[in-house]
Length: 631
Image (cartoon, rainbow, N blue to C red):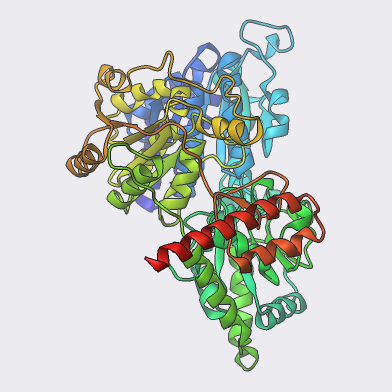
């Protein structure tokens, strides 16, 4: 914090109130820790805190963003944290206000996002009496927080808030909840002394530091140098540790291709020749072939999630595995690593690169490494991500690809479903320019996430890509966007279905589309946007799309586009749950890649039928190509 800002805060604190309360200690600590925004919704039990907030806002030391629902508040705080790397803060009252946060807390926990959740609670003398709007949010949320507190003494407020901020961000990030009874916010402090982050770090004894032995680093380097087919598999931990530069250097120094998870998207320049996109259920074919054929898999800040691995026994089953992660619970949890290093992945990579720098005599890369890169280039050419087109109708891939090409430097938020996967496939973005619910898959995340992102970067274009189903989960946040005049671009990919649900029903439930059609009762999204004072545009064909995206490219106000797309379009490639990543629907295999499948079939008889179908498809495609070549 700058000296000038520190003086302003101290001066503001003196002017706000002569008598210091628990609520004062809360706001003072947040401001001293550079909290710019609080996302929230008031209610009875948290009113003492909101009353104190009134004075701090009037002094322009902090700003509260009034969302239309507590879930919107916590998603906005979550997204603010994702795109800035700072801690998001949200407020809610007791009872239903607190329980409305549960989905958002779980979303942040599954994706390791640092947020501070402040909930009001009934007076301490009413605790446990089933008083009006009393719920045990401390107990309810225990499985889905990194840590939690219930404050019973106002004098503890400052230290607990400082501890919570430290815990949320250090180590593996995550949400921390603090439940504050109403009277604690109003109670006068007997002795107020600010607790700084340095005090927490140096005196109280919290530590998130790990030492790595030189021998372990030497073993890692040996594996990197001798491997013929290495692959970097990078997750959200690399984003959290800001390891972008180190990954870039490692990939290029050792000539290692890199694939990312949904959470790791943007950590590596996606147009780099070494980038092979996202792997997993809806990853690129070339990424899935690469992970199936590699002989060394370097997992960096990734947790071997089931949507990435498919059947665990068949995931990278021919590879030696290196695992770098800050959380000891993740090492060996899903996949046993041959070598593992515990620590901040940025520092781990720095140590590996620094040690390598002083040992250049051992840095020759195997000749077969070039063959590996050539194979990946062949897969990329043979199995590209295709943007289909139709003359009179819009296809969702076409729309999303056009959005990405129009807003190349934008920050993107998404909801969950087919549009999320297509956005991950077709949109290229940089570090912290992608905000999407990955682990929990929370529909309704995208719109409030755009609010948090836009407030974090008011001068940057923010694009929210959603579906006609997801957008309705938190559509009331159009009111928040309107109130604060946030120039968010809302892109609804409207296919009248819960698109991914419909695709699974088609693939695995014999096309019994039970309760997945959303056409009946669907609002007129353009008129709904207009009712909030937001411009709305309907788009139903290619010409309209091109014209609308061009016309409103630099539009400086919030705007909603309703893209009417063909309904029953599936998202491919797709790895069926419980299968190897090499087995993908939606692509036509060549003979070389059928051989990869055959290798996995030796340990998984369930692949036999899939291979038989794909072999026939391959023969038919080859025959058609031969006929085409004759003419």
